[in-house]
Image (cartoon, rainbow, N blue to C red; front, side, top):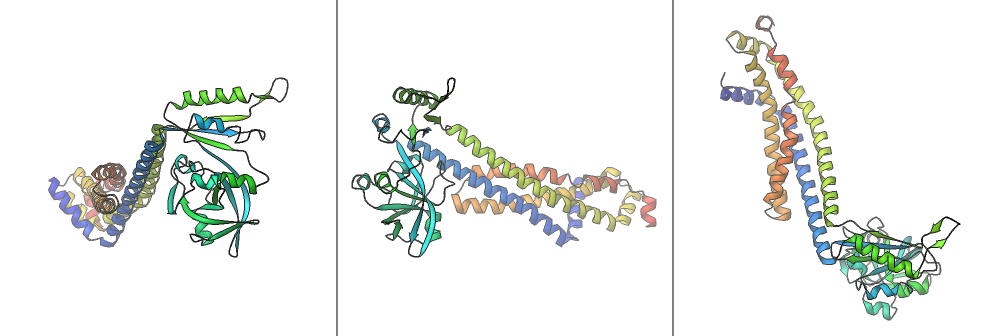
Length: 381
């Protein structure tokens, strides 16, 4: 039989199972659409990372103080070498807004926090240098905290006996080390030192334009000269601070791409289980209903390979229809969200093809069973 005849018969047979075929195609298209949306989200996140890195340099260096005797005043000399240095101290406090009370993270920081933590302002403004200098009672709230309190700009938040005016609502960026601390409230570090008795250990973040390994060693050398390690025992030394170089742009991008691939792989496996089972079930049902027809075709000269490829093509067509439908909806989604991103579309199409290839082979086993049917037994059935 010709390939065109096999495709015609396979398409005609799928038409007799419209509901089952439609459901399988829908499952495949939803899996492909999910993969496309995930790929778009990862690409958008990577674009944000590149943009953020371009603003602050390619690396971040964190300094974690482990000694209570080392205060931020003693570390202020670092600002002479790194003007964009961000420092902060934090503690947990109960705040009150109108009648609502919450335990939140109070972070005393400076305006550079916005740069080093890639903070995005949703409303209002961030801390100004004048806020620190004049010790103004102002604060910025994390978006989740503001939504939880239903706080409004200009509203007053009470910390013990001090009232703070809300000047901004922010969202932590992609590079933020505190992206999991969603209930955070930022206040000027100068005010924090006055109202908080028990302070946490200070930490600092430095944007580095050079290699993180070299800059980290230089900072560590400078700090060790001023603050040598303390002897905890005869052979043990207690480090008074830790200097950690954050991953560079390439490593972060690789990590995001790996997460995206793993997510797409998970979506593909779920799609394979659901749609693959449906394809096997549909072809088995088709073989049973066309049992006598298969016998007639074999008696008229059709080979086993013809019967095998006839049912295998049915699984291929289901995967192809699902790929086209999911690809079309995914292209519309990407076009509406991010413009004409053909690179994303073709990358999504490639990943979707990888998902659909094993799906088209799910009909291998029922097709093999159909090709072994004896013409005599089929005619008697």
